[in-house]
Image (tube, rainbow, N blue to C red; front, side, top):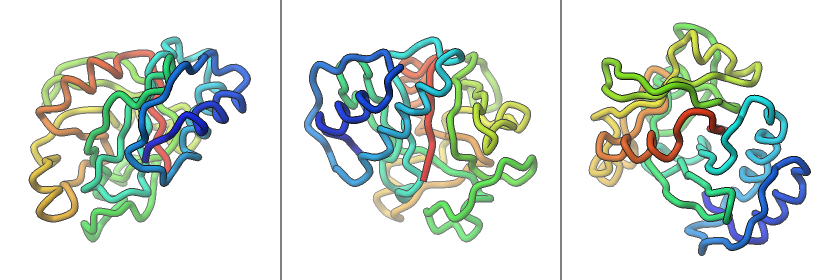
Length: 199
């Protein structure tokens, strides 16, 4: 998933309250899901009162396999994709451990991923080290906080595993990243921003 300048300009124009003025755009890595940017911009517009920081957004493409870098950070000031990462999905979304999301659930105990818009909350130290709380903003993910769906690092998210098996390990519904990358994710996607996950 990546976007070119034309996609960014169209998405920004379609989102009247996006409050961004794109000036440039990076060369796209791939061009398979440009509509996700428009959906993320619409989500940013819809949840405008709650999302106070509108410089960086995270977009997760759950249509891609877990062995692909399917989470991207987009700088809304210049339209540039600033980084991309491996990210897990929940065991309940992929019970056969195929590497592909089959289903979503917002139900407690489902161990599944939920799609939709998330507001990044406060950072904290938990059993996975430094982590970031998430607040679900849509009916399909509004139980994220009580379900303890968070951003954290995990040993089962590993680039070597992704290369050799074509997939990474699964979480209990959290957005888990490589241990060597979690610091960058938390630094760039800190509290008050949008994380948009879709399929």
